[in-house]
Length: 419
Image (tube, rainbow, N blue to C red; front, side, top):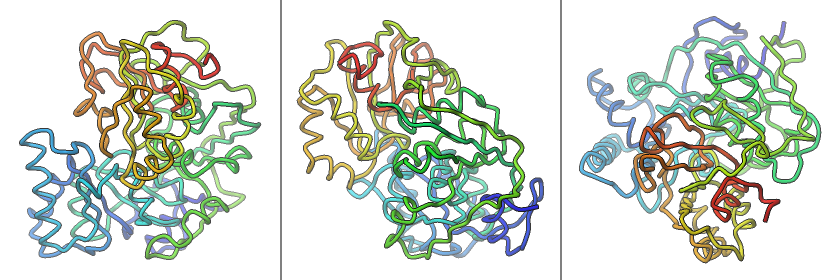
């Protein structure tokens, strides 16, 4: 009986020939990361352990990405705590302000993670790096504090679900729609502590940006990780990036899966998650006249350059509807710079958008786009739980960037085709 790609990565990092679902293994960590919310707690744990040094200053990443610039005294103190820790332990990969961005955008962008890695982060969307064929998962800050000291962690080997996508993607249907459709099938608890392996003929045609989107939202199904087998698209992306040699693992033909889910996409419409859950998914055409007060394009799910290009394609030469506000936040400084060079930022500003500095921004309802009581938003982010982006009596819909941009122009949720 063979192993899945996730099982192979765990076996390699446990220095074992074989692992099976349900086993507990101690694995070596290639990269440990935290942000301005989770790092201070992890640092407290690190100090309580009495550790005199970090396991490897080159393999720890600290990113200010939730409140940029600092929005108040507590957020300023959190960043100061990270900065002092980074200086004391000579952690080179500490990113703040002008060099920062959303952690799950800049970590692969800067080549800090590669194929075959095992990545542990104090953020649930650490599973993003599965797009590269890495095993990456989120943990609590307590666990991360221990990892920063030891470079190791105990993990239970997850069971696996394979999701096979077949057919040909219609116009305006993107990776975001594929993962929303998956959520609609599996539900938010359909893959608890399991690995979701994305496969099928459709995957071969997806860009890295769309794969990052899908792996990012695997956790919304309750999954331990989401992962793609590395192909030529991945190999091209990782070649020349980073300091570690990539390792390209593939699932064995006789690997065992708890379930194989098949999704045919040829007639798929753009998908929208309705309040108040990412698995409350419907086809775009089923929503009629839902007025929006705010549109947010960005986040670790859809804040990459490709996402901004799609949004600009819809917005160019058009204006945001009166009474609707459009917030666009590039995922990193490099993405922002490229968006300026390509004229995308000018298109956004001429359309009436507000551009924010690279950060998480409105996604968590903490900064630069908080919703008031009774307001409705459509967002390219990953979660729409009650109160996620502001007041508990606000409502959030999730969509791909093209649908979000079109909705900003119309002042209601709608399709780019209507424009």
